[in-house]
Structure formats: structure tokens, C-alpha cells
Length: 103
Image (cartoon, rainbow, N blue to C red; front, side, top):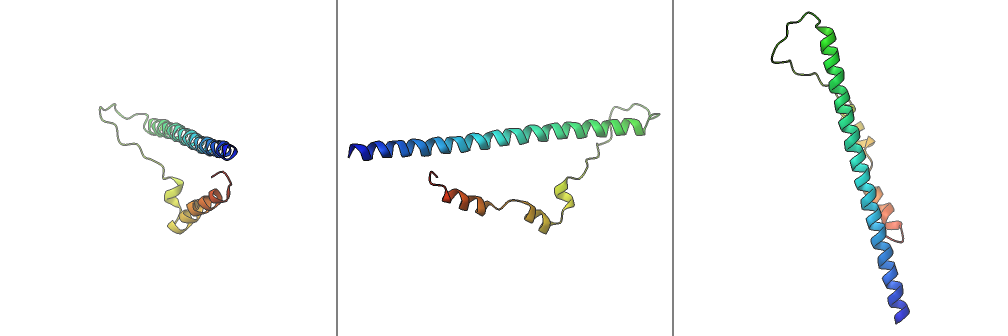
């Protein structure tokens, strides 16, 4: 009875550690993607401002600036069928997770 209890304790501990590791990796990935998106948006805004300044050198200064033109993203250019095929299938990932002995 004692050996089975100890074995169960360590299995639960390993499963808890594996879940914590998955959560940490997911949080790190989300943080990295948010940072990269912020950098990309800042770069696009600076580029649009530079293009606007270069395009109108003799324009009078005004209090209200015209809206910045945003470039379409890659998702907007793809047809919906291609976009759906490009995104990973959530079901496949869950099937892979079920096959792992610790999850």
C-alpha cells in the first residue's frame, strides 16, 4: 500500500509539473507574439509617417493630421479557404496531447 501511494504521489507531481510547463510555454509565446505585434505596429506607423512627410514637403502645418493609411495584413489578402487551411488544426494538437503518457 505504501509503495502504491508513493508512486501515485510522484505521478501526480509529474503531471502537475508538466501542466505548469505547458502553461509557462504558452504564456511566454503569447508575450513574445504581443511584443512582436507591438514592434510591427510601431514600425508601420513610423513608416507611414515618414512616407506622408516625404510626399508633402510644401504642405502647410495643420493641427489635424490626415489618418494614417494602414497596409492590409497577410490575412486580409488570403481567400477564406486558404486562410483556414493555413491555420493549424486544434483537434490534431489535442490528439497528440492524448497520446503522451503524462498528459
